[in-house]
Figure 1: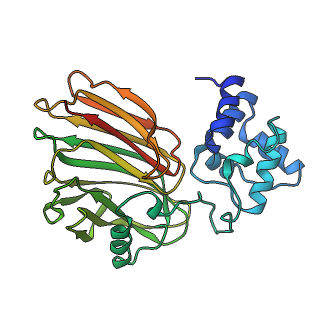
Figure 2: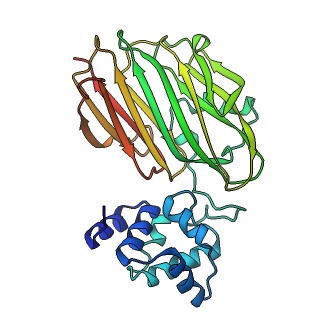
Figure 3: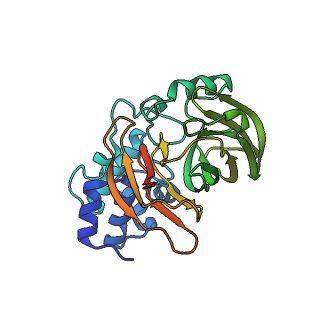
Length: 310
């Protein structure tokens, strides 16, 4: 679908950065090699690959030279001053790194059980950012006949932002009443099981998934994993917190024929304590009893679906 000037004006206002850049390039009809040529004429050196990553949301300009390029892009693409740079929210956190990556929020600001998560992550000697960010994540969740979360399965595509990354830590939050000791974790594709840690009081399980390869900076990797639960009480929502921007997230919920909700809604939150906004009613598909959401450019915060039983 083609972009219009109205579309461009809207996404320049709302963001995220990569969608705004992509829309501007489409509306102006400039291929990336021409953009690179214009930048070089202004004394700014940026590769076509970097420009491509920026418009995909796979990387985020943060270095001083990259921010100079963004300022120049505003001129080249005939955009209002600071319209792109504003979407990057650069400032005291825009320090240098070997590979550019999105700014993060702390896990503490996203999830109420963050103390448990941080303690278990520390036990697994996890770095603060994991060395990865998401390019795409497709998640399938099954709700059972007793309204319980039966299982969830993820297909995940990630990109490394430094050398030597060889694992991913998957986090599961059980519903009230969950027995994490009985939750089963499966490494389904392109990974194998490492250590598993859990805490009974909060129903948190963290599983270490070991990759079949050691990644270098900018490498992508696709892997799949799953959690089998079914130990908790009635489930009324499924939420996921994102510490990094960029990438696509797809969530599909499937309900048992014997336990169908009367209403489903998607929502977004900036943090756990913030009001739920961007509410949209979702209609169950007829045969497979599913609802889903698609977020093309994830921002730090929370996305989810909640539902009413009766």
